[in-house]
Image (tube, rainbow, N blue to C red; front, side, top):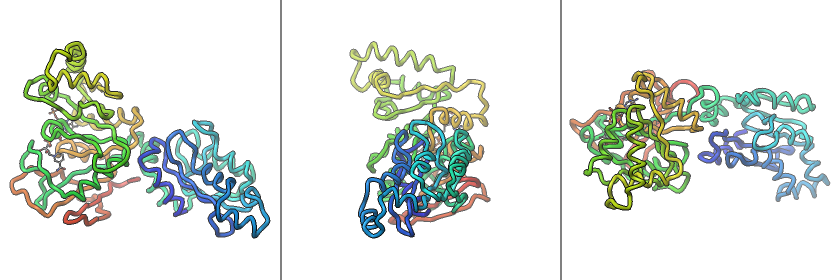
Length: 397
Ligand SMILES: NC(=O)c1ccc[n+]([C@@H]2O[C@H](COP(=O)([O-])OP(=O)(O)OC[C@H]3O[C@@H](n4cnc5c(N)ncnc54)[C@H](OP(=O)(O)O)[C@@H]3O)[C@@H](O)[C@H]2O)c1
């Protein structure tokens, strides 16, 4: 089963909003086939593992010679280990339970039940009705931890939320509020970019977008780019775009899918600036905001998401998460600054915090957010001078 968990993780970053799932087929203590779910919409782990046997491989070929059995014959005496209950419904692919039954695999060991209402016990029931022996809840806690993004999505109806910031040895995130301040070294930054490729979206507050002009991409690591998310509730970003002083905002460069939460009161201003800019863009300077808005119109997936003006401050974080869940964002990294991170901490709607700590100090700097005392630090990683502290909120995370 641990091999199945290992395989499942190979799908990290590309299966969302589907779960990461791994599967291993074992004939008399020998692994004869394995597979994992590679990509949303494509074949499930069980299909890959069973096909790996049917199509033959070095181990299968040797066992065929030794036993005289065909690949189908081997399957009929094997045990299939899978990290998540096999599906029972026709989604983008046919039910995996049928594939197991059709291939007469006599025994299935499952780590976690699938809470998706379309499955939720029906996969196991189908197998048992067909006479397959099923062992459930095997290494279940480890399985739920491995699949925590998916379980959070289905059970809590929100993305899995990772808080991230970089702090100095004296607990500051910037030299002063509003001043971009590099804090950690290259190894920590590269690891952070790798983490970005593993999640669906990355969010920063208005203050950070204005101060740092963040690119919010994973340029230091090869992989999937996250959706960029930010917000403009008071029109501060809009004012900065309208002013001649602001020449380029990476968030609007049109390279990546981006969502901007804007208060309903300024939605029209955004739309009108975008429309006007599309008409005028050939007449304006290359660097003007109008050109940026031309890019918005041509960028695939730029979304303005209206936020009701009446929304109270304590409802903002739940609102962002509800909207992102509807957009099928399965996991979100919140990368600062302090105000936005603190509002996630206050809401309790977060699962994991990754705090990159530098040995350098920033006396009199802008303080980091504060985690509640009860939050557990579960891991430290030493990174060439910096240290990554990982904290876990209670629950699935
Ligand atoms: N070291 C690090 O890891 C790191 C990371 C990020 C940023 N920084 C630094 O942090 C500084 C900016 O931090 P900050 O705390 O001022 O800015 P921030 O958290 O990025 O932005 C705060 C602003 O976001 C808007 N906002 C919208 N919804 C919010 C919500 N639910 N909760 C909180 N804010 C919400 C508000 O703007 P309105 O008032 O306009 O509505 C608020 O003033 C910069 O100096 C930056 O360089 C450091």
